[in-house]
Length: 475
Ligand SMILES: *Cc1c(COP(=O)(O)O)cnc(C)c1O
Image 1 (cartoon, rainbow, N blue to C red):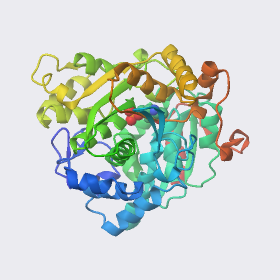
Image 2: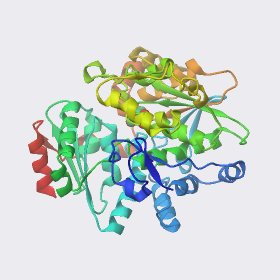
Image 3: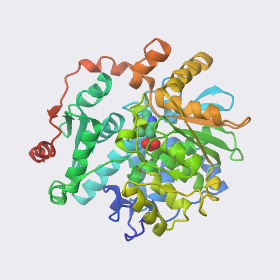
């Protein structure tokens, strides 16, 4: 399998060549040259597989430059009941992403049973093992620099801790994350993990990362890399649980399901789109946003209008607080018939701070065939949904999952099987749970008291030079 850029300029690459990089050299995102097609016989055979075996079957269609036995071992080491052990609802940890039944035909799928209790572990844990394998083979090393407001940074650190030839420098806004989130990251004592708290906001931290990455000489000298949501391997890993959820919710491959996906950067639901293109019987993809509704607006109106930072709200589902959806270009590439010239033309506007509309062109007619519907939620909707799911089904859901459930309920068609992806556990967003239910969510036993563990963090001004100094000192 070869990979091409959504902007068309680069020569097709192999999986391992694009694994460690971010954007394609032309500024586009990588996608496989074509989506593997899964026929009925293969789907029938896959229904019986364990998660790890299913993951191997799917990933081996996209990763053809790692020997089969090695890939199988990497996948088997990643998707174990020990790594994804935090099931809460009596779910079978061996299923890795088990379903919780709310009522007939309505399920949540637990994607947040990994070490950091959010769905980013599903892909990031695999990324950690793939990075280590490829770097060892090539005798190379990488220094990952990132900025986080919570979930991504902790998932990256827990995936990369202790890995050879990898160091992680993670910037976070000083004092802006919850005590639990700070403890999750800052209590790590692994010598290859460096937490840097920046005096300022998340945007300041992200600007520093951009400035460092734009310094080509520094970037090359210190082998600076990233693990952000546009990384193709993360999208590929996420395809697997759509198949798993489908198999768990249905009895035969004649049935269809819908997935409702709490969405920010369009990474999670992009994997659902690809699973559907591969032939998984997904009737509809329900895209749920919070108040930051740039994607809901697109699917309702055909207008893609990225917001400024000033227009972006800080909400109680903060991991979906985005101003533009970095993976969305992948979907548009497919929508416009994989014509990179059109993508270049549309993103020339986006990159200049503008917007585009497909409402009046030839692509509007194609959009319905991708079967997306969408909706958005407010803080009040989240509180009401958390209360309703608790009262009706006895299940506690987090604020992001609540966005997914709210829009799923709104969009559900009688008789349709609906799977809402559970993207985080309620304990990560305890404050809003307390507001909704008046009580605190339960915490996995081994995370009791993590706030009291010694923390390792360096506090710096929002200064590019200070961050460069820290990187230089440790590399
Ligand atoms: C990252 C995240 C999301 C959004 O996922 P995208 O891939 O960016 O659409 C939703 N919920 C939680 C809890 C997250 O951490």
